[in-house]
Image 1 (tube, one colour):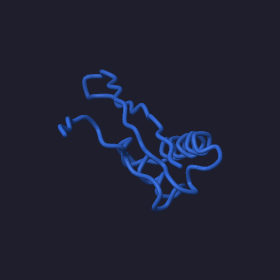
Image 2: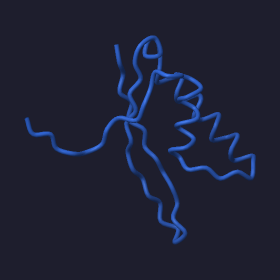
Image 3: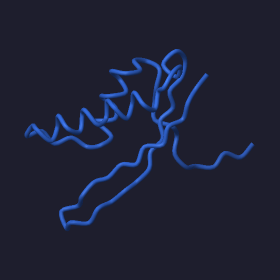
Image 4: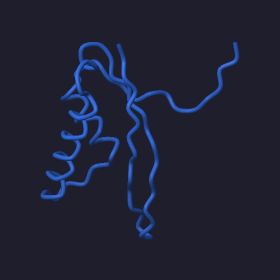
Length: 87
């Protein structure tokens, strides 16, 4: 079993423009059982709050990578984006 979860990444440019892009992750195996989305939302919310309290700056992709490595060790990855396959 596998689940694909779309994550919206938001970042602010130095000009003050908010950029939002989508990335998908895929979670498989035992890690995909249960309420994977709820676990991920809670963990990302906690990570965002912790980073806001610290002087650290990390990209959204790095935060997602760290949270998923902790929640779903060895059972997740970013889904491939774009491209064309001719067969």
